[in-house]
Length: 127
Image 1 (cartoon, one colour):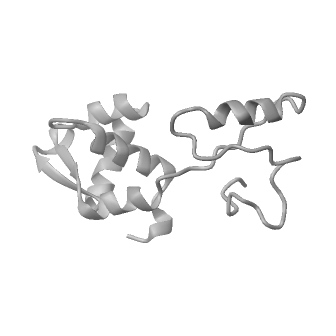
Image 2: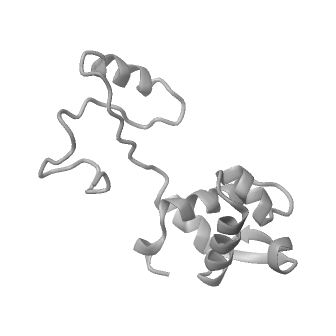
């Protein structure tokens, strides 16, 4: 699978499967990832076909999945996600300081007016 063809939604499904203990089904992933059962089932099947998941048991909606080594490598390569948040400019610095103290936030800073600069820190993922 091409690295660029894995979407944020795909990674959310991979993370849901990786975090689940026991037999994770499309219904479980739908609940964990906040998507429909149909969407979860389709994404699980596609990720299994692409080698990021393996089907452990069952068929169709009753299938259970595991993350493969390729799926774990995909998650490891994409551990962080840029989150673009618009805030009141009078509070931007204070909010950035607060966010730096939140568990799981790796970096928070005031970026300026939008994100269209030539050297975008988000590598263009903000467009």
